[in-house]
Image 1 (tube, rainbow, N blue to C red):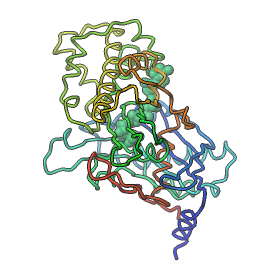
Image 2 (cartoon, rainbow, N blue to C red; image 1 turned 45 degrees about the vertical axis):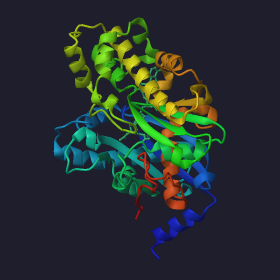
Image 3 (cartoon, rainbow, N blue to C red; image 1 turned 90 degrees about the horizontal axis):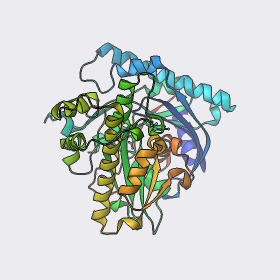
Length: 402
Ligand SMILES: Nc1ncnc2c1ncn2[C@@H]1O[C@H](COP(=O)(O)OP(=O)(O)OP(=O)(O)O)[C@@H](O)[C@H]1O
Ligand SMILES: CC(=O)N[C@H]1[C@@H]2OC[C@@H](O2)[C@@H](O)[C@@H]1O[C@H](C)C(=O)O
């Protein structure tokens, strides 16, 4: 037997696996690295975060990624170069962390690498009949495996697309396995660049689980903070938005986009929610001279209302009152006090942080990819039924170090 297959076989049989989850989200702020001890699989999965670190992207890395990220026209060679470079960069970041944590690579069983999303184009966005849903994450897993010496699973979203999904959101699998609780209707809401949530029914019935993106969370706020205040990369603690007033005319125009009228579930990225999206609404409403605080207040309100309306839709479908639900928030948006305040006003139910469930909010997405890798190697026994865009498949391509 090939020795790599034999190692993988042994890893699959272990009671506890050490898996590093890597997540670099659409905000391009950096790489989240979570070293997890994962025992069991499926509904018996238990995770302990042993170490966690976010390695911030340098301005150089952000600039290089922005050249291709969600762009319609790019330098094709640059995409190819980036695919290799990001793989090497991520591998280097993992090696640096292992050194800092004093953990030899041979003690780590697997790496689960999300890669850097550079394109997310579901069919309703590209509208080209003959082409399927498309999504593209770069930073090749082979580089990570070779440079770290650790078996690496990567490129998780392609199997989801191949099995009929849009390639996202994938958080649902880990959310279901780690956070479902009998007798409690849970909403796991993540507010990164884009917002998404998983509904976990009190019944634990996998076929009732639901997941969707809701639209922008921080993406538009970040873009326009940078435009008005080039030295800032986001509206820290909503300081600017809090001093502004929501412009209802602009808000209605922004919410009038076809994405918000499209039925759930749905997924999206910066291919839609970009500077042009807001500029076009400003131009249609003759509000090009709106002040920065008013614009940021309006964009923050857009995130709050569209997240709340998506959750209300799911709640309504269950027939249970909203007060029967608990919302667990994670992602950078949890640190935006205005966004959270408005969400709480719009959704009269209990709010907690995902930290309260034992998983550090900032680490949650990286952990969820470690759980996906754990399922591919040692589990995969879940059935979400036939609808709702949650294919019951395992995901991730396996790269061996040698
Ligand atoms: N103190 C804060 N005040 C306001 N906003 C904040 C604060 N801290 C973080 N954020 C927001 O959170 C964003 C980063 O969130 P996160 O790291 O969850 O995104 P991501 O994982 O890259 O995105 P996605 O999940 O969509 O891929 C920042 O760009 C910023 O807008
Ligand atoms: C294509 C892509 O990278 N999508 C991200 C993005 O960030 C949030 C939202 O849009 C979500 O659908 C997804 O990430 C999370 C981790 C997911 O798949 O669940």
